[in-house]
Length: 378
Ligand code: SAH
Image (cartoon, rainbow, N blue to C red; front, top):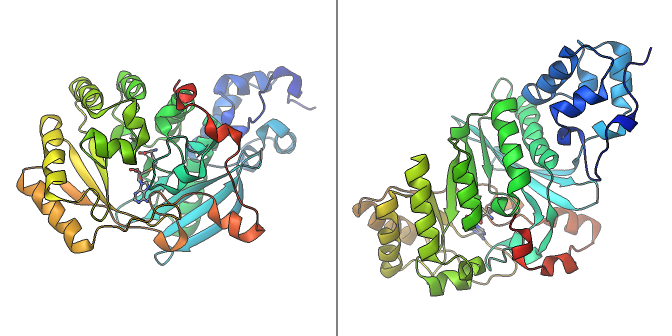
């Protein structure tokens, strides 16, 4: 007897895949199965990162049926895997159901393994020095497409590193996570509660979307927040990060101050070091004055080359000097490890370029890339 109820039960929106289903969808999908079945499958696909049909504790017939149910198909198709840093960094290029491409980067360190996930196909924020911004915006990723990147990273870590587990998730891939709060917040809950990665090991990086930061604070969870600052005065920041015109520094820091008071979580400022642009003593002084009241940490990122931005990165000696100026003022600062530059997998370099090179096709932004960012701020 076939126990799986036909597809008619679940009305699926387009672009749905296995990890877009909620636990209640599973219960509806399997009405003739005992209640524990949905839980059993749910737990296995999240905690153990296995496909439902691979679950040997399920009756064989059910497994067969599950393997043929289109709604349970993967949302991501791996089309290229490249590696760098002696395989300690891997970049996956995934094709989505509508043929858009996104990238996910997995980085192994002695004490942790971190996956950097994308939250949108492309990005509408248009930061001048970022390859994703230069490419334009295509669409929001669904909750399932975000979660599935983490699932891929778990199984990849297991396959290549044996017992070592994926420990950290950072939303620093393609897209602006706080311009896709609905799907990103659902994904956060799944990654934390269902997959089992602690909130303190999950970081959202934002360009500074004020309403999104307020919503993030209201989650009342222990997730980390990183803010891409890059300049501490409005004129300079607006030229690098155009959304600063909508959410200028005063409004941003006021919002971060309430965030800090409510959550007691220390924020990090990200600062990509650009030669002669934001690396002077005055830049450091302006940054220090923003950090002090917030007790913020500063993450200095060596600027990675992108096709549309001619400015060079700050030389290493100056990056270290800049870090020392901050530290002498009592600000905790670190210089980010520059992983994956050889495969365009480092910060700001993600743009689906591998596919471009292989197929000869170029990913020009379509008309959706010209939307008003306001439309995206849910
Ligand atoms: N939209 C989010 C997350 C994606 S970018 C955000 O802006 O925070 C992740 C980090 O990489 C951000 O701090 C971003 O400013 C930084 N980044 C972008 N382009 C870069 C580049 N070319 N070199 C170094 N860092 C870059």
